[in-house]
Length: 122
Image 1 (cartoon, rainbow, N blue to C red):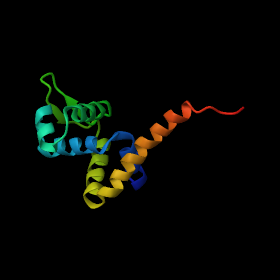
Image 2 (tube, one colour; image 1 turned 180 degrees about the vertical axis):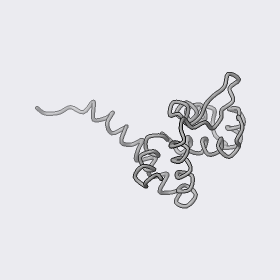
Image 3 (cartoon, helix red, strand yellow; image 1 turned 60 degrees about the vertical axis):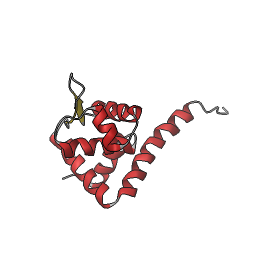
Image 4 (tube, rainbow, N blue to C red; image 1 turned 120 degrees about the vertical axis):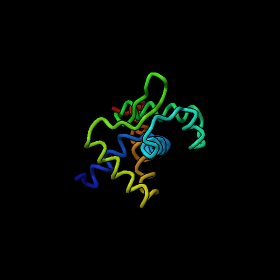
């Protein structure tokens, strides 16, 4: 069983935006392949947002794209599937907490990037 800390780390590392979580959960609910246009329409998002979300989900082992461009929920392992279950449950109960976790995860990467260019006094 996944611990709360595991779920938090999973959310921080797997979802660069709330859009990516929304795309994943929609793919999971549909249980079929969805085209980019279907995702754009269902989520009322832009092509760019959906493309970025799909790229991150595929790279993270959460979804797959077939040769025809259909996106499908396809976790790389049973453990990842369990973490997605826990994430969906938490998102249903405490959506603001999940959103804050996603934003804090993306902000830590941005902070590291900014720090790399910070001038330091030696």
